Image (cartoon, rainbow, N blue to C red; front, side, top):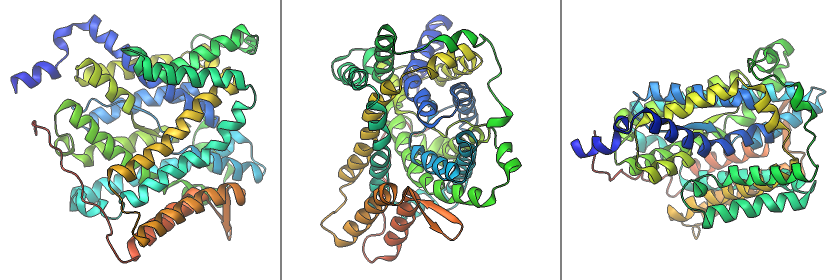
Length: 439
């Protein structure tokens, strides 16, 4: 245990070096975290605030032991877009429609608590039996494909800028060294943004009106606006459209816990326990959504930084969380981010959406899903066709009486149901962690 603690404890580095490491973790999560509000229309400052608060809350619930950062989740992008379109079609503003979407995400966060309670009561194996890779893999693939249209639309506003961001991300990711390799998304955004400014494509006049210091939370962007509007049909439609996505993000969380456990060589699934980390993630997501911020999720980018630095002390992650909270109180910084050209966002999101789908494909391959089996083919095929077909062939949702369900929601529900009722192998066997340190 002495050798483990020598690696795990960063106090020997001193506060200045720990601060530098914290800034590095901030940069690692920054690009993807601020991209989600830019893609959805949510607020950048509130996003940073609740990324920091959510991370600190996660650390508290997981007994301060797990070196994980919680940033914005891309998995719910399709849900935000679907509910926003439903709300606008009913005459609401995009801002209020997004508030309804946030209500759906908050309810999705509650599913984490349910899953955590079930895992605590019955064990991981019995619960995840109903959510095997043949279901979660195609759902993740569909999320990326459903979002691809918006990425192309943004790229079409200025293809040269979009290509610059794409080339920068790929180049820094493949040939970059050290911190450059860790922050390709951020570099893609910064390089394309700077070139756009030099080309005169960015109007910086709103930046002068933004204050240096301000309170990020607005009453109009909280869940209170939904109850004041009182559209119960849209409330229910939002909940039903978005909640099923949580099944995919829960699987993502479990995969991240395996990755962090393997990197640090400690079994975090046993101690503090998967039920605690799921509760922390769900609590962070639900709280963020109540105040108009995106759903949170554990970030693989920061796990990469852990692997690079070999400094696993969670205090370093908490420093990054506090820095994110400080940035949230600078409206001028948020304004600078929001002035980013659509083509810059489009180029980066084109890669990120493709990577989401690629993760789903990798999940199918790594778990050796038998696609020679007719039952598995039926499950995967219906998930993909329903998600994509409803998105592009039925105005992104299908009405069941007053309730509107997005393609992703229908696909997830159908996939889970078919996998449960069709004969054959229902689930998967959860891999056990092979690290040496179990305590």
